[in-house]
Length: 381
Image 1 (tube, rainbow, N blue to C red):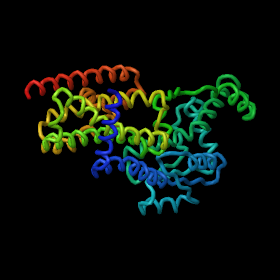
Image 2: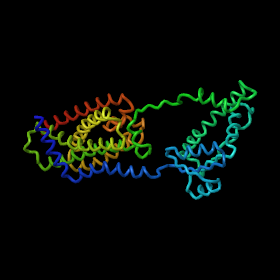
Image 3: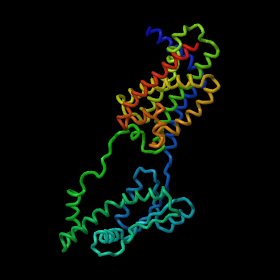
């Protein structure tokens, strides 16, 4: 019996691979990844920022660290503020950050005001920021600036506090640095958990972030295309020779053939691009995705009733899943709708173990609904 199903799988595979539309779906997977890889190797920042250091050693260190940092913000070094302003006016830059010649002194003065060493004086600016407009992206870029300034400001705050509270006569910077570097600045402020290791390894470029979800949708598209081929074969009465009781099994082998083909290509792509979280978490998730996806596609075929309505509904369904499923962004308000579609569970399970339990329940539920729908159609026929 198992050998018969394997032969059927091989025969159906040959049949599917003769269909041009199915070949196009399979080719979409490497084509999309290759295209994104080409784009990701180019400049893909969302904000262009000009950096100007007027001569301080500390400013030079900050500028160099920003230029070397892998970020969605693109940084460019300019020799002087005037040329940077011209680039801003010409729309070549979105913002200008100017680090002054007396950067160290200004940081110390700013810290002194914050610690109360200079009474209630107004705090002085450390970095000059010039922008054409104030928008969300530029506000986010300032967080990058705050992070770059944190090290200098943190030490200055520490120094001012020590001088103010414990050592009015003053302590040398070398002595304070020795204590600060070895004792104070240890540990991490945030604890990052590698819950989505596959995405993190897939490249720091933000273009790769939704790739995993899009590839899963293509796997499901392969199953939906197979359900359309099966509907067409039914209309042509190709399977009239088959006993009614075997048609339910035959349909699912038909759908599984397409889903497995797409899944194999996608898994290879996951590993080739570094999107995979490893064999152990990836393979069970993909097996459940194929199983639930097979029943999901079968249910969609039965609901749409005829080939024309199925062909019309597939692009609408794909667009709905692209928007509703957490492919690009997770919206808690859409959670109830997200739970209808198989990609949600695959994408959320690596981050949240609860979704792994949900995935098992969802797979069992889709199988049950599909079996009941199959019994109903068999009774009606």
